[in-house]
Each structure stands twice: as C-alpha cells, then as structure tokens.
Image (tube, rainbow, N blue to C red; front, top):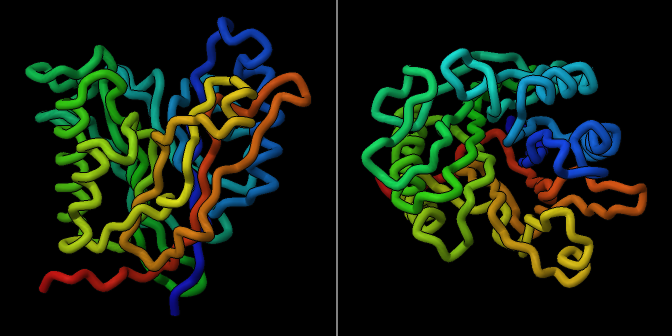
Length: 269
C-alpha cells in the first residue's frame, strides 16, 4: 500500500556576513520555524556549509540529517538530505561528485565550461516504516555558470537514477529555467523513467532577498522537484516568505510537493 510523502527542496543561501540582516545566523530561527510548520517528510537542502549543517542537525530534532561537503576533506558547501526519523528507515546512502571520477572528492568537469565549484549529489534510499515501500531521494545543486557542464552533470545523475531503477524524487537548485536544455533533457526521460516536474505550476522561486520581486511575482524559477512517483502538480507550492520580522528565511522560496511511494507506469516497455 502506497503512502503519501511530502517532499521539500530548500536552497539555504550559504552563510556570508555580506548579507547583513539576512546572514544565515539571523535567518536560522525563521528557517527552522518554517520547516517545523511545513513538516515535510524529506528535505533536500542546497548551499549548506559546515556550520549550517550542524545548526540544522541541532535544530531539526525530528529529522536525521545526512551529507558532507564537496571539498577534498569532505567539508565545505554541500547538498545534505533530512528525513523524519520516525517515518523512514535508511536503506542506503550515497554521495558522488558529478565528474568522470565520481568517487574522487572535489573533482570537476575540467574539459567543459564548469565554474570553479565542484558539483555533487546526495542520495538516500528510504523504506517507509509502515508500508515497507522503498524509494530513492536525490538532491543536487547544478553548476551556476556552465550550460554544457549542467547538461553533463544532469546526464551523469540520470544515468545513476536509471541504473538504480527505483521510484524516485529529485530535488535541487538546477540553476536552469523551465525552457532550458537542462530541464528539457530531464523531462525527456518521461517515456523511459516516467519523470514529471511536480513543480510545473510553480512560477518562481528566486527572489534574492528582494520583497519587490515576491510582490510582483517576478522571480526566476530554478528550483524543482522531479519524480516518477504519482504526484499532482496542482498541489505543489512555494512556501511564502517576507521580511516583516527583519529578514527572510532564504533568498529562494522553498518548494513542496506530494508524492506517493509507488513508481508510476512508464510508456516504454
């Protein structure tokens, strides 16, 4: 019997004092309050530095937080995943760099237009404590400069998703607009994997701490939840934010979707 799972993707905005009142130290209480209120079952975070991961682990006591940084010493910015400890049992954890040597820390796509940032993904395979249904949850932050690098990173990630052959959800900051080649390539796996954009009806997510962008709706959409599990995109939403308390919870709106722990039927045999 399938169970409904609430999934969240949340770009945290890395900690920098240049953000002033929106530095992570000041935003943390509001961020934790937002997550507790939304109560997602699984969360994919992006831009989480070492001190931020610790703060999240300390503050989100109902969750298990897994994932390390992208640098050679496994520290630095990363894409950790949090899941409700009473809802799931961890079956497997995997982190790989999106390069031709995925197990070698901090490796990059040197021959392409990738930025100086190593890119990696985190994956957990979770079993529902009640139903026993197993699914894979992937979280990624694609390159912000190289469009060729984005395509290569996406191909590597989807090769792994296809090999795993599980019901899956993929969260992330893709640094790509809905009409981009990157997003089109992901959606081209609909026939083979059953992939859909659970956030297809969400219009924008990135506001850069600017209330005018939120009020006008002139936000870029670069945050997504893709899945081959049954989902209704009409139920997905971006979590509202404002600066009424003096800061935002992030410079992105978190996005939420509901999926069921059962793989959708793909069209290909």
